Length: 145
Image (tube, rainbow, N blue to C red; front, side, top):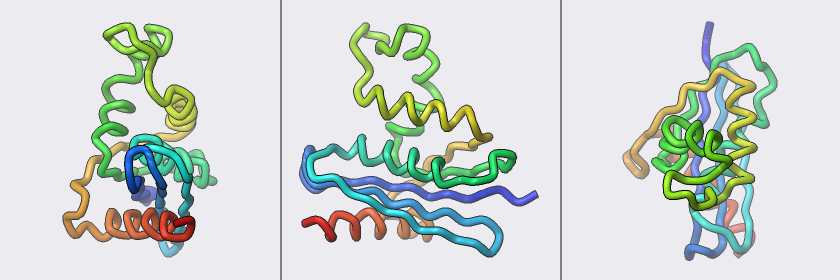
């Protein structure tokens, strides 16, 4: 069985500033490109939003998803930190509120709905999927600037 392949990227011009996110989904001979933007946001919010929008676009819950992102924040958050945050009532190990908690809660719900393998890919390293997601995120920012 073939997995759904997803690449996500988010970025910001200024931090905070104009932000954009891009998603490239591929399954067999189908591909879908998504993008969006916000006027006053952060890099981390856009990275999270890209992953959320990607998983929201998946229609087949029985499929396994390979999701690639260049955001160590997203990878570490979903793989390493989230269980601790939840067990502490969405507080960090330092007892501070988790930043972007509403986005993390959305991502957590979607992550539990699907079988997602999370992968980190180095940004701007000629990975075709990451390059496409980056291009979409930048196009989204260009459209509102």
